[in-house]
Amino acid sequence: MTKQRAFVFIKPHACVPKNDNNLLYKQKLVETFTENGCEVIKEGKISSSVIEKRKLIDAHYYAIASKATLLKPSELNVPEDVFQKTFGISWKEALEKNVCFNALDACKELNVDALGLEKRSRFAKRSVKFGGGFYCAEMLKEDGTSIYVFNAFFMSMRSQFVEKGKQIKWFVVEFDDETLKWEDFRAKVLGPTDPKKAPETSLRGILFKNWKKYGLMRKPTTGENGVHASASPFEALAEIANWTGEPVDEQAYGKLLIQHGITKETLEMWGKDPQVNIRSDGLKGSLFDQVEDMDSKECMKNLMQINKLNEPAPPPQPVVTKSSSSKKKQNSDAPPTPKKTTTGTDNGDAKALIGVLVVVGLTLLAGGNKKAAKKEDKNAKATNNKKNGKK
Image (cartoon, rainbow, N blue to C red; front, side, top):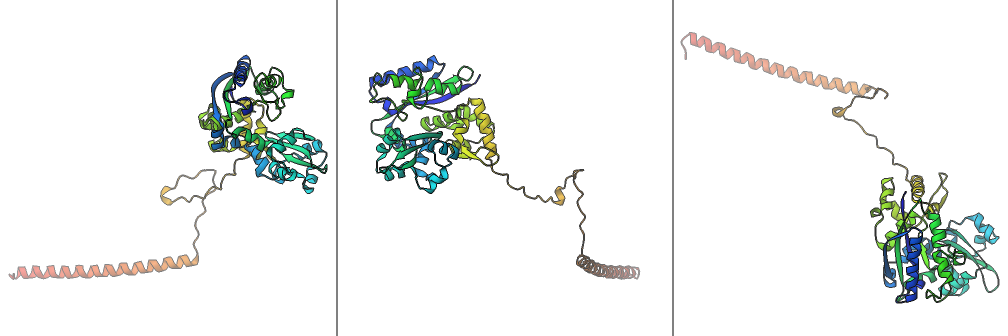
């Protein structure tokens, strides 16, 4: 049995300050968690001013934000088969016809603001979700021609979090993987993204059915569906770090991943849902998508494999030259060290050096002999003088 943690927050449209009916929904949310074996271990609230100042919503929806404003469609990793199946045109042809736009450029193309683009996305001719935070909608221009817009809802969604007077109410919930699988936590406790399709007993289904009772201004939609919850244990790790400030290496799941060889820096980088190698042949995909709906053990196994596929090649090992003073016994399996060979020039230099040393030696010897002879001669004279009575 493994304890799993998810990060959940009530979105601003269902969490208006001093709205007693919204407060009733918060109480219903906690009751629903308890009924499904989920324990609230932490909770808090964050105002729109703090969300704006710390850019929390931008970091939370980084993958969405980048596709909506930062990257052009040609830079995106679009599943071509899904695109063609959904819209009836190949991805290559759509790019060649210049009918693909990110949300920012789509506003200019359709001559609408962020709210206008979001409204159009609700009534799009066709739409598809490629993966976590990766959507595309077919919209019609005034002349009836189609364009394909990525993450059309983002800018309007962001404004909902940072407008003056808004807030979110957040929770960290814990549950056992044997009694509640992550997939069921999302499908049955939270409910699908589209609240119309959510079970009536799920958090999104409850709000959709009773939206007036819980003080909402309008019926929930895909964009305003009341509640957000982590899609995997890894997303929870990243979201808890972002919204509550608890670093990944101080959370239990983060510590476990680090113990299994994934660095803190890698975990922080992965929190932005980058495109990573997901197969040995170099195929790339969203990191979040690779672990969506997985329980913590399976999630960790997949993350370890992804880490291995994305590790840089080890640097070449330097050649180490051993000095004569630190020679170790050579391994019996290693090839013998070849003897140094000398050239003719080396021999000639050696002979010349030996000759010089011999000459110097003989000279010193001769000098020494002469000094010894003189000393002996002096001693002999002194002896003779003594015998003859000379002082």
